[in-house]
Length: 205
Image 1 (cartoon, rainbow, N blue to C red):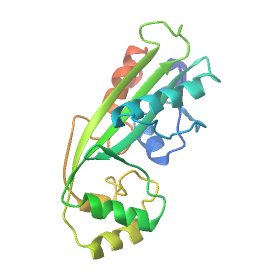
Image 2 (image 1 turned 90 degrees about the vertical axis):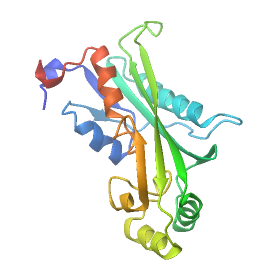
Image 3 (image 1 turned 180 degrees about the horizontal axis):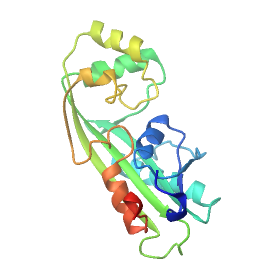
């Protein structure tokens, strides 16, 4: 772990265990606070715009209470034929999602925002945002396999009903992305670049 004396206060604006695990890989001291915002897409809003807006709103909600911190917000929207695919919430909806996606390519938009609450909001690097796109091709699997997968892993809190970091990888035929961590929910390649621009020194130097 990099000494906290060399790192500004960092807050992950999320209650997601997946994002906490990913951010923990960077070995930076950080806090995790879940933002209380409405994550509903706005009428006519494009999927990428939804993800970017929500990432910024999550970061801003926490930054308002932590003016001394770097706040990380992230949001993910999955789309098929331009239509958003959300978190299923239960088995029946998850099975319907997987049936719809099998044999097809789904686009995952993972938006990232780093808000430096220490800066004037008008400063050039006060808010950094980026959308990382991942193309995921699902295998054409029978209902019995899809149902069995869901009963084993129960990924009802995941957009697209598949945890690629676990058994859900067996549902997939191909993943195309510039950042292998984006699909899990926090693009670390983009994030490390943002943190460097905000003055975070990696490797303790």
